[in-house]
Length: 146
Image (cartoon, rainbow, N blue to C red; front, side, top):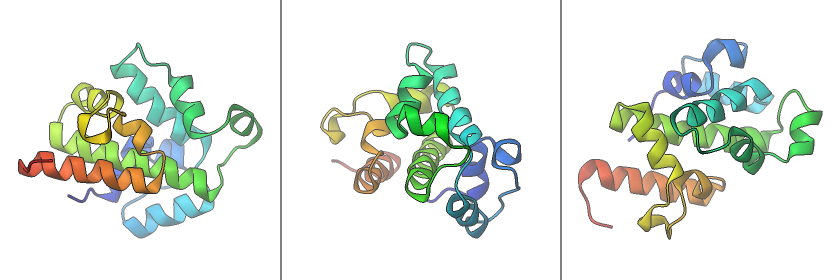
């Protein structure tokens, strides 16, 4: 299942936080390569926290980027920007599948048996883990066994 660049950008706060309109994957690639702004991360983790208040936005934020780096920079480096985009993309995929932000957030934050009881959020902090989360989402959409 692919998800549009527009939906990924929306998960990151859209033009307000990204500073430019994202319509295509190429637009998204450029924004990520230039370094995502702090506001994009804040919108993403703030959205999770809005639907699961028991989860601290700061805990999620500082799982992605060290606290000192967060305080020091206005834009993140490529590696951190790619991680943020990956989590936003997976969230946008799940949001498309569930059509409910609370359900999508619960999926992203709760341990999943197919991910060795790690949450999709935690698993997606690495590229390979992100692929594993995508596979779980795909299997779920198509009713395929693990």
